[in-house]
Length: 121
Image (cartoon, rainbow, N blue to C red; front, top):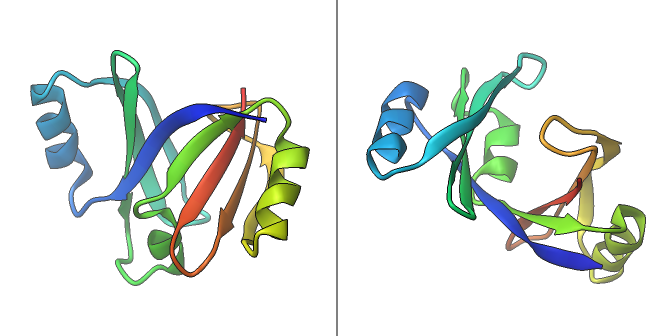
């Protein structure tokens, strides 16, 4: 079952400038990570219960950037069951269930209008 929204994801042109901006708004870095195989660096920032994940891609035309930009991450207590629900509603799997960085497991789905990241903590 879906428990709550965890964060939104945003692609930025300059990771350091964007980090400085969000820190000026009171957000603090919780995680920094890189995925060279996908060509990006990212920072997960939190302020109270709110969070944003910002990504900088080496190549601006990287197809992953379109999937990640504007995604909504949701926390689930049963990732397999909820993933099936998204598929039933016409979403396509972008990343099947795998070990995550900020969660024990994650999966990504997308339709023509939106991308979701399912997190099981």
